[in-house]
Length: 447
Image (cartoon, rainbow, N blue to C red; front, top):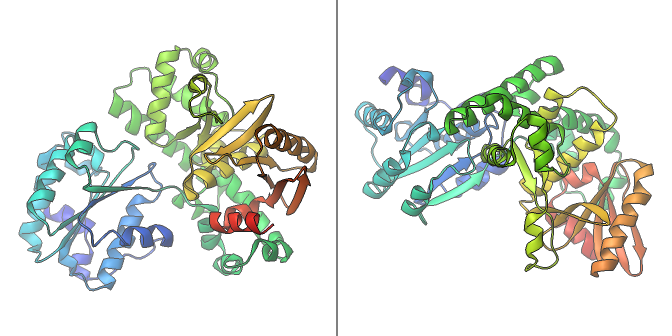
C-alpha cells in the first residue's frame, strides 16, 4: 500500500506540481471557491471527461498557496491493484497508511477518484466527516446519482455537487490556438461578426463538431486513432459503468440501444420502436435509458408545456442527445444528415452544460428544436435553404403564445428579423458557442 500511495502522490517526495495537464480554468476557479468550506465536494461526469486531471490541477493550486504536500492525499480507487473485493476496509487501509506514513498536521485535503468503486462508501465518508473537522474531501464519480438515497439523507447540507463535462468549444479553441481564443474574448457580438476571425475559427469549429471534446482525443491529430479510443471509451462505459454496476444480463440489448440512441441524437425517440429495433420490450428499454443517463452517455429533453398543470405533457416522447459528438463519429459512416445532427447536438451541449439550463423541445404543427424554461424558443438553420422554414416555425410559436423574441442559430449570419413587433435574432454558431449567456441576453435586450 505504501508503494501505491507514493505512485499516486509524487508531490510528497518532490514537492513538485503536476505537469502536462490541460488547463480547465473555469472548473478550477469554481471548485477552488469551495476548498475552504467544510462540505464534501462531489465532481460527477462521464468517464474520461477530465475529472482526475481537475483533481490534480486543484492539488497544484493548493501547493501554490503553500499547503504542505504531506497534507494532500490523492487516490484513484479504480486501480486494479486493489483487487476485485473492494470495500470500506480498502478506504481505511488507504487512509490509515497515509496517516502513518505522512503524519499530516493541520487541515488535510483528501482527493478520492472514482469513489463509486467502493460499496457503501457513504457511511465511511460520513463517519470521518463528522469526526475530523480538519478533513476536506473532494471526490469524483462517473454517475449522475453518485449518492445513494441513504447518503443523501446522511449528508444533507454536507455536500456540494458539480458536473464535469468534456471540453466546451471555448476550451477546445484555447487548447488548439490560445492566441486566437484570446482575440475572441471580450468582444461584443457585433464586433465579433465584423471581425476577420471566422475564417480562422471555422476549420477548428468543423473539427470540434466531428471529434468532440474528450481531453485525450483533442490532444492527438490522427482521426482513426481517436475513433478507436472513443470506441474503447464507449465499450468501457457499457461494460464497466452499466453492465457491472447494474448486473445487466442482456449486454447485446444494451449495446444496440446505446448505438441506436447515439445515432438518433437530436431526434424524438419512440420507445416502442426503439424496443423493436433492439429486440426487447418497453420496460427494459426505459430502464436501460435511465442507466445510460446515469452515466452521462445520453441526455434527454422533455416536451415543453406553456401550462405547468398540463399533465398530458408527461406522456410525450423525449428527444435524446449525446454527451459528446466524438461518439457519433465513432459509430457512424458519413451521411448528408450528419452535419446538422452534430450542430444540433453541440447547441444542446452549450445550453445544458455551459448555460446550465433546463432544455426542452416543442411540437404542435411545427417543431421547435429547443425551448428554455422561460419560454425562449431556439431554432437552427445551418443552410440558407433552411432559414425560411425555420423562421416560419419561430414566428408561428411566437404569434400563438405571444412571445416577444426567439433565437435562430445559423452558420455565419448575424441578423434581426421583425414581424408584428416580434423579433428573431439570427446568431452564428461560432459566436453562440464562444459568447456567454449573459452577453447574448444583453444583446437581445439592447436590440
